[in-house]
Image (tube, rainbow, N blue to C red):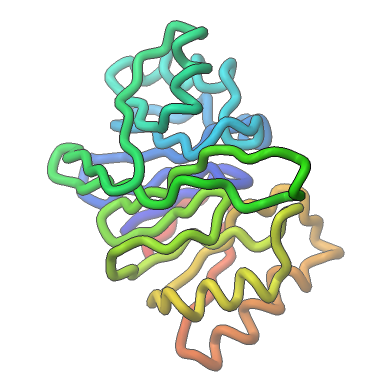
Length: 212
């Protein structure tokens, strides 16, 4: 599957020739607005690093036929903005030109007990797993895992254990816009651990399409 990472948790996957799926065009992914030929846009939850209305509007301006796929909580914001969408949540599926989009999980990982709870829907894109801001498990075999590796709601250990349990062939890291090169151990640690379990960890170069 071809993947082009645009930043943070935003990437474009091509699971089938000519079908392009974008994830979470948030405030940390400014180049998302310049991408063309998008078939669908998946939005996992409402936080601005994943859903930025102005960026989304620009993406849709350049891709007027793209289908926005999301959940109830995000849908309320899209209703206010006048943006049409298809609601796909846990246990639901959508056929996108022969590509299977399946929702899993329903809750954002806890940041702190009193901070509040948020809806988060992870998505399978054929055999690619993207959990959004969660460590929820899909009911599916996973070949490629888009793995969040640093966040207010997780430790590196959490990411590594999640990856081991899912046991994909290959991983690429997401939710990492706030990591600078001087802190690249945050990428290296899971890479070094997971290779002992036969799982490849590949940090993608932003803006470069790579075949995973």
